[in-house]
Image (cartoon, rainbow, N blue to C red; front, side, top):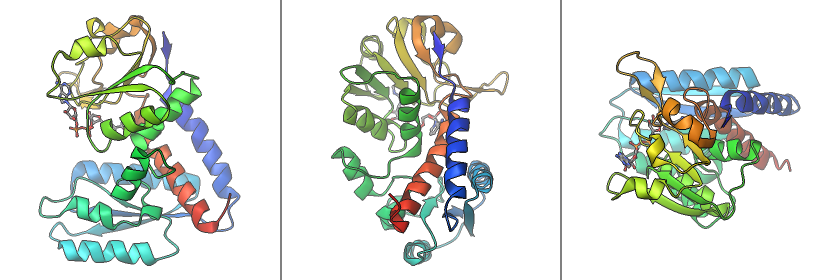
Length: 281
Ligand code: NAD
């Protein structure tokens, strides 16, 4: 079994990006919109800010009151769209329930949509066109590439159909010529399907859900889950790592597998937007 070390791949990407940004005449800028005082949101935003600082990227945070109206939120996004100093716009979720997040994502200019949630980018992904794509699945593709894991012709099974992970993951694997099956909470006989997976991506949010009897000998297992263990309070994945590891050819640990790739992939998307805007090829 080979452990897929997301931490070291992310560190390599970080050094590449740092050097690239240092060569730019002007610093790229990421604008982040955070609404209200959700604790998880503030942790994620702080991590993104830290990474921007490390890479020499400007970070502009718009921290809005939880009671902001939809029209004020849309007006801010439009203002950021029109500001040519801003290269990427990110709306940190979750946002308060009274706001329409899909309308907000739709308003973010597709050219600055570094999270890949604008329907224009989602549509391009489905058509196999060049686009911005959600960071977690894109980071997983980078991990597969770094470890020279062949995707073409393989049966890839994705468990989870969220807009953030499962759906874009399935599209990326399809675009890389895998035969893709998507499973979700209503899927019948799940383990009959997972047992046929050459590549299994698990994005459910259910600790240690995948056990050895559910996977094929030699499978590549990618664990996206982030759960807190009720006993130890440690972060654990959706895959029962200790139980499954000896049956896999490759596996991502939690923590240290998929997680470290997400923010660095966001930075890669931002640099791509910057280069597009500066016409750097
Ligand atoms: P989500 O709740 O939006 O989606 C979960 C999906 O799992 C749903 O599509 C649902 O149909 C499916 N599901 C639930 N129970 C199932 C079952 N018993 N059998 C089969 N399918 C089932 O969650 P999400 O945003 O996609 O996140 C999934 C997990 O990945 C969470 O643990 C989340 O914390 C983690 N995550 C990690 C990163 C990262 O950077 N590592 C990024 C995003 C999400």
